[in-house]
Image (cartoon, rainbow, N blue to C red):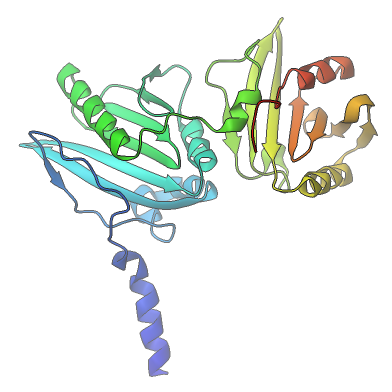
Length: 283
């Protein structure tokens, strides 16, 4: 009984014991760097960002390391969220950005809104922020964000599969990554998507990859079971009538699948799928 109590106490304090930094934050001239926060992990992320933690853990959050830069009464906080992969870091970043933001040259993609800079770089999603406002503090926040990017390796590459989306009609900064339940289906996971507006028509293209082509075949079979209609077309394209999402067209190419939503005409759907070029991508 005593040993059980000891184990329970150790489990209770596991999150608090994880205090070792995963990165080396840069020293900034004129600022003192303060490390007062623990290293947050999935078990205690809720303590820091409350309900928002669910979206992060759904995107395979690993840990959060925080440093504050202090100069007198001025404090600039740098938060570095690490995820299992660049895809998952991009996933949570794409959930929180807006196409109306002012995008910067920091990270694979990033933006600045006043005294806040957010960017994604490899498996890292970074937020640098101050509660102050004004041009001077905005510049310093930008500079600190840039220095943090440097110590993270200055990875400026977006996830490779994003390159399959054609530019024609693409709505700016609409690309996203859905880790779970794409189109509302639990079996449909880890999917890139992008929104389009062309000739007055709105539609979405999507793409995903798996380690084995059989996994995609299984996914399509699961979709077939919940579909109200299913029809193989020419050139390996499959038409699925989804009672919640309308006509869905999917084309499997090895360990990659491509698809369309909100496109009713089969000929048009096939043309759109053909415009998604995966030939230059190495998986």
